[in-house]
Length: 87
Ligand code: FES
Image (cartoon, rainbow, N blue to C red):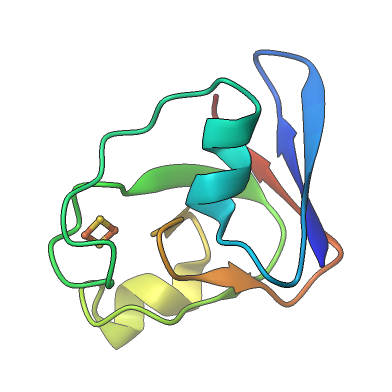
């Protein structure tokens, strides 16, 4: 489990072990466009302001992943205890 901190909204949302970040956002009433939900299309891509991402998609390049400034909430998770998002 980890936490999503929504910087602009000023809220934090817990992501349970058995749900995706996308599902946790949806549960909290925050709609994020998604399509494949498998880390392929990049539709769900969100900007990350802080935290270390556990990238599980095949969309971002290795170089993009290493910057930890964007992630695909449909499948990727966090290495750090929280990810701060530009939402
Ligand atoms: Fe396609 Fe997330 S919905 S990469």
